[in-house]
Each structure stands twice: as C-alpha cells, then as structure tokens.
Image (cartoon, rainbow, N blue to C red):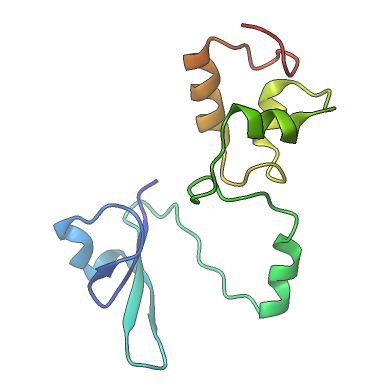
Amino acid sequence: MSGRVRSSGAQLGGVHHDHDANPKHHHVIFETEDGNRGYLYDPRRFGLWSWLPRRAFDRLRYLGPETLCRIVFNGLTWRARLKGKKSAIKIALRDQTRRAGLANIYVCEALFRAGISPAAAQGASP
C-alpha cells in the first residue's frame, strides 16, 4: 500500500519518494553483517515486519508462485491450476496455493474488468 523496504539508499520495493528519508516513518531499522543499513519506511503504518527463524519458512511451502515473479502465468496455466475445482471463481483466484499475492482488491478488479461475476462457477462464460 504505502510502505517500502530500503537498504543503504537502494530501493528494494515500492516507489521511491524524496520523503523516504524522513526518519519519523522508519519503523524498523536494521544493519547487515557487511555494514549495510536498511529500514522499513511506512508513513501509513500498514506494513508488517516479522523476524522468523529459518524453520518457520517451511510453513510457506504450500504457497503458489508469487504474483510478481517471472513465471509465465496465462489462461492455460490458470486452467490447469483450477481444473476439477468447484468453488466460485473469486474464491479460486484468492486461493494462495494456486498463486500467491492475489488479494481481494486485485481479484475483484480483474473480475470486474473481465465482466465476470465473483460468484460465477469456474469456467463459466461471462
């Protein structure tokens, strides 16, 4: 939404703005072993920072590919991932095991633009 992670002046996520330098909005500041500094900049406080042990990531194995990754995802890929499912299309698209990162607002907007009812059965025509 509004937060971003930055490290030693290099942008790691989000959009760079001049006001990123305002330490009032640096909610997490960290330093790596090689001396680089970073911070979580989030003026609206929607961001979350969690420090987890490596074994905690085992719980994330079930997640599908990240929405912004470079894996090609098209109609054929979706068809394969949704094959045999009976839920409404909105529920299917929000299922993080199929594709991580598709939140409610993105799914609703995509379905609206495509002219598909969120309650429609998967594979139904608009």
